[in-house]
Image (tube, rainbow, N blue to C red):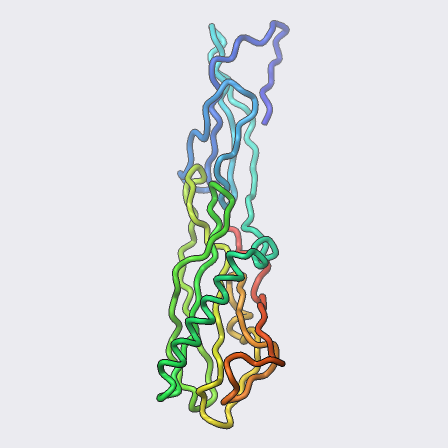
Amino acid sequence: MDIYHTKQEPIPKITNIEYLVNRVGTRQGGVLYETTEWICPRKAISAGRFEFGAIVHFEGETGKVNSNTVYVTEMCPSISKFKDLPVVQNRAIELWNETVNYSRLNQSTHTTREFGCFIYLNTGTGEYHCGSTIPGDPIQLTAPGKGTVRFVYSEQSYDPRETFDLIVGTIHSHYPMTWAVHGLERPPGPSKDDNNSDLPGIVYDYSYTVLAGSPVNISNNPMKMYVYGPDRRETP
C-alpha cells in the first residue's frame, strides 16, 4: 500500500495507523491492526478475495490520509502441503482400524462401513489437524457395492480478521474383504465418486486388488495412501 505526500513540507508526526481488511463483496472486515509502524503483521490467514488499506493519522491540522486499496486473493493450501504430515498419516491408520474393528464386530452379517474425517488448517497458527470421525453408510459385502462417507461442510467465508479452522481436505478408509462373501473382490484406491470430490482427498487402502477371505494384513499387498480430487479446495 502507498501513502502519497505531494507537498514540500516534511511529513507530520504519525499518531496512529489503522490497517483495514475486508472480504470483497461482503461487509465482513474492519480494522485489522493499529500501530504507528509501517509494517502490519498478518495474524490470521483465510481463503478468499480481500481488499487491504490503511488510514494514517497525523498530528496537527493534517488530520488523516487514506492509502490506496490493494486486492489480494488468498488460496487454500495444496494437498502436497499436508498429505505427508504425521498427524494426517496417523489419522488415516486410525480410521482404517475403526473400519477393521467394525467389520470384525459385524462379520456374521458381512457388514462393513468406511470412516472418514476432515483435515483442517488453523488460520491463526498455520498448523494442520484432523477432525472427529464421520461414519460412512453401512454396506453388506454379499454382493458388489461401495462404501460412502458423506462429507458435508459450509463455505466458511468468515471475517478475515478471525482465526478459525479452515477445511482443506478429507481422509477416509476403504475396508478389508476378510468377512465378505466368497467370490467377491474389489480394486484398490479412489473410486469414481472419490475422484469427483470437491475437496482434496486421501484414502487409505491396499496396493492391489483384494479378494474375499483375504486376511486384514496381507504381506504382499501393503497398505498405502492415495490422493484424489482437486489439488486444493476452491477459494470461497
